Image (cartoon, rainbow, N blue to C red; front, side, top):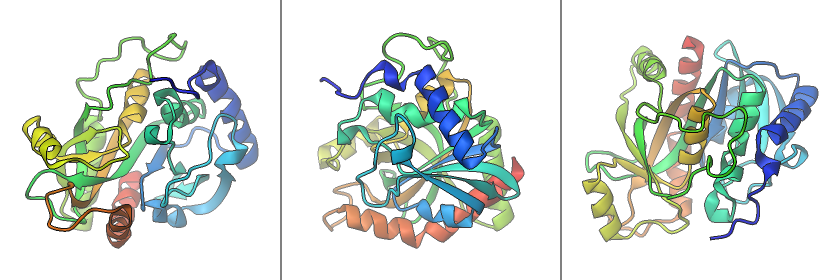
Length: 280
């Protein structure tokens, strides 16, 4: 499978150049937390105080986003009293991007000196007890995209063989739970499985994923978390369960349904992330 966008232009040197542009334009320096916003979860950007925005088109190595629910902007400001940068939109591999391109924003936030990374996504619920609108702390993931952003020449910033036994920081997971408890908000926990997409799963695939130990499924996040671990960035993540996985409900699934569910639970998601960032 050839990837037209896979090139050294998305390595550590390119990330430094992109970070220089962001720093110069937005005055960003060593934010406490970088936040990647998943489908329909962009509402968090409106809670950022003193927000300065930069379109992806103006950042070297970034691409325009073409998926509904992904704004394509980098936003800097304060949230919960902490300096943050938020990435509203992703470059998905199903759009034809290589895993290196898909994960490139993580290189840039590392070059900006971010201390922690928070990833989010809208996901299909595989575990039968999940309901649409549940928030799930990502305990671990399964990479069924079968590609890796670290493949290729090793970058000077990266560990060649990162240990992935705890890709999501136990310390940060505890802070997420503490934030939810403070808000009196129920919080699920489970394993996220990353698939390539853009199709939703067949019934047989959902049964297989359930047997493999997955609790929720989506088409993003995994490349970002792999690269963050290679860069020694602490990571936490939350999946918004937007719907039962394809085939588990009597209705046909559409992206519009996912967006509606994400927007309905958006307020809850925003409150959780703001409280979490305040505890960092």
